[in-house]
View 1 (cartoon, rainbow, N blue to C red):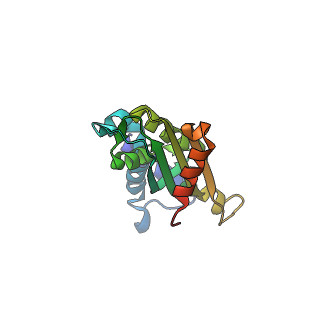
View 2 (view 1 turned 30 degrees about the vertical axis):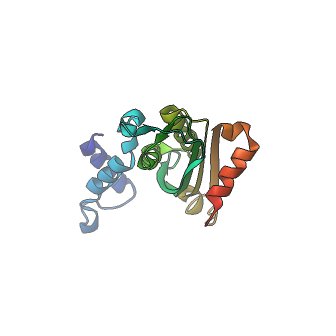
View 3 (view 1 turned 120 degrees about the horizontal axis):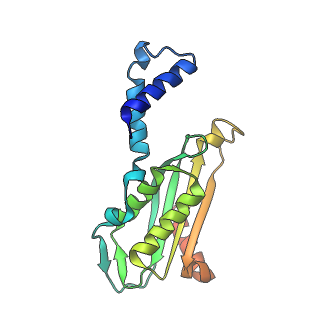
Length: 187
């Protein structure tokens, strides 16, 4: 990202909004916004294979593994406003397991892009599938979208839920139901 160019664009935006970019409270705003966007879109520079690195381990487990309540913070690609919530990931291994912190890192990587929740949910599921070739994988994201709560229809209590199920999570109603029951525990 060309941080200097982004700063110039934010300064221009402030002027277009009727603000004075030389005002004390706004002097460093273009730099702060540029640094913020650099962090919030850092997922574009990440590669899932490099992120996972060597955190795939041989293991004969055949029971469902779940990482629940992973925090999600992203920007919607339509309004560039935040959406945030929780991501739940489950998979049934087939000889390989993934280090648990790598699941959270994959979620962060896809969240740190301009996104729609539906696509992000699928990207996470496919990344898990590619990494460990499980019997099945399920991903659910529950998120609040500021583009829907603070503008537009202004539905402050709305929650969007998306899921992506692959392999046995798709073909077996029992497996899918077990995943749903386990992610709902203690909520």
